[in-house]
Length: 242
Image (cartoon, rainbow, N blue to C red; front, side, top):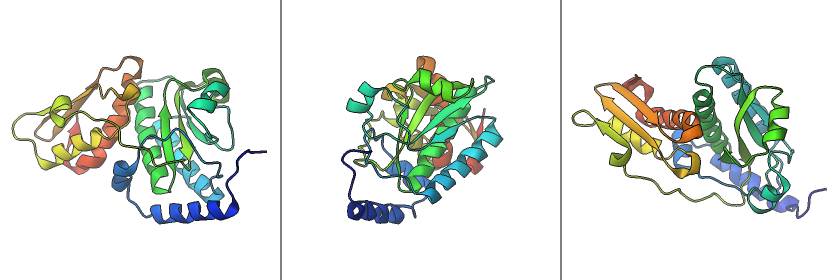
């Protein structure tokens, strides 16, 4: 039995608020999404779970991944972490896939999409790349490699914006940067990165863009997260990756 359950009346109000939030676009979600580590004990409605699962299945098929959504399960984090850092986390994505080229980047890209999509559905998220229960998650992934989990649910708050670098600290453009490039860099700065380091560099010339990340073992996932945000902000019709 859950302790400190929210009353049906309060839960109903929370759900009504979430329905109003569901009208937001992915770009709006990108600006509203912030890391949330503590969650209310409100189950995710079945219809929203189905929508999330369909999104996961599409990514798994297209990107050759094995991401899973777990609901009403507390095993993503060990007891001490659940008590002090990940309080109330009962729903999460296991970010996993079979070994292959650019697996971490593909999972980062997928994770960025899932987090923003969840935000459009009135949910909050947190990418946890180092504090999750590695043993339990590896068992749940049935042999595939796990690079992190994404907590998802109704947050105890909406979180707060993370501190960001200035665009000129993470990017350069050959000549005068067009508006689409500027928008892309601004969007990239909204992406969650490991330890909030924002250790990436984006270069542009004409309609070609390249990105590199230097964040140790998290570089691949960070690259995927940042690439997704850049593309969403810049518009994929305006550039090509090189």
